[in-house]
Image (cartoon, rainbow, N blue to C red):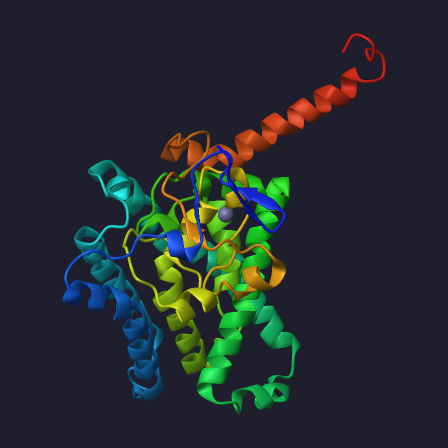
Length: 330
Ligand SMILES: [Zn+2]
């Protein structure tokens, strides 16, 4: 495969990747369908922002955010059935049952772990260590500015955590299982080794929990934008949206079987950090996964970082032990 040159990298040499927005298929169907799948994403985003802006205090609480989050995901599963991006990504019972296992795991065990040793504890330490009156300049800013700042700061952290996972072997071991998914759908964000979900979760939780409304608004940006990372829906995403935000297209390139393509689009909600640091590839991919699309079982996903880490360490030690005396025979 020849691949396409992007900057000084060759994308799509190992597996097919479509590079460039102009080469990506458009939504097919009548004018109503095309209208809906062009404006759905901005409409939901602006509606949710308006909701968190004007909702009375009694409604602007985390419980409402959780209810909205779950309802939104259920709605998106319906939309995946109506207008899938790729037929090959369509849900089977086996995929659905596996996904639900990880979603359930994410909602229960990780929430508990997070409270004890995750961001909950870190936030507590930070809040105790500083004089928060010094941050009145921040709480005095317009709500949307606060929310944008929170969202950008977290995404900046997520960008580097994710990029670190692709470049530092011990972190990669925790992230690799997530890259064995062979299709995208709404629940795939939850699939992976729990250690990774915990590391990613560190970036998601709120240092800004003392500013509920701004934090909820920032969370909405994550929900109404970041959720589309893993989704099997064809949209005519507006130009400004795909310039600023991470999209299914971007994230499918990141999950591509092509090695170079997978080392791009690290952002979560925003794609601007990838643009800024030279890791953005605008395009899409259909053939996803590792090792030619080998499907990793749940049991392997759970132990992979430890078994692979043990194997690599053992090999490294054996090589070192062999080196001094047997250099000629090796
Ligand atoms: Zn990744």
